[in-house]
Image 1: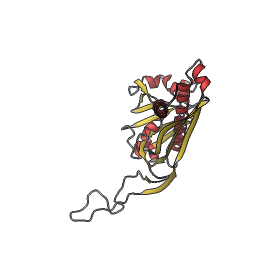
Image 2: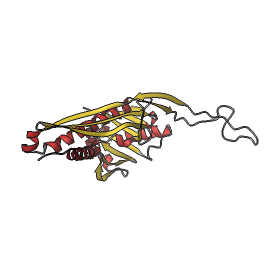
Image 3: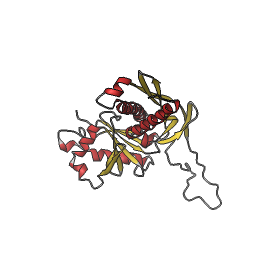
Image 4: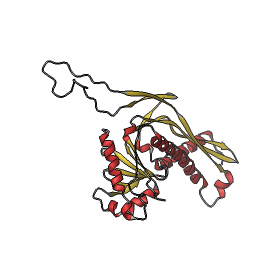
Length: 287
């Protein structure tokens, strides 16, 4: 069948819709960030102190005398900058495979390309969040959430300590907080009777974008992007921002009679504006 230019363009649009549809199911960590567009290659942002401002010695905010000057307070910000990163992937569908293979190779290739980009973005996001300067962190109590001795498994205590740490730093993580887990630690959590019998625990009616339930007011997300032997509590849409120079985009290149090349890419960078809105629990696994 003769292909016209118009048909090629339509096919390209269908590919783009498919890739975006697949990738939306794969992105997990980007959902916990504030997402904003960007038009500059270098992004400058400001990290804000979470300390509550006071009037200082001899100039308290409480009890100012009648007619007196207002106490002076000064917020603090730290200027930082970051450069956008490109996350590309490419797949090839040969004509013979598309026509004769036992599986739908084009659909599988679309999914693989989408997953590759989404996985790279999520992996980058977690690495930056967990490695940021100034975040809260503590080792798990006992010998890990999967310890052989059940008495030494204390995940609820570890989670509550993280919530306490963030609250003491003026981040009300219960407003929109997430608990990020590896599949291993999620299993350990679900096998713990202290967790599943906790009145704050509930499973999700419908699992979407890795969100599987809730504990202590935190939404639980499970993803392989979380580093083994770690769990993270994060203030959603507050701790960090994803600056998108180009959202997920795709294009196809036809080599008639030989192959179709499917490309997808995204350009963006993370800005960690509130590091104390992040808390990492280490040593969650005994072995």
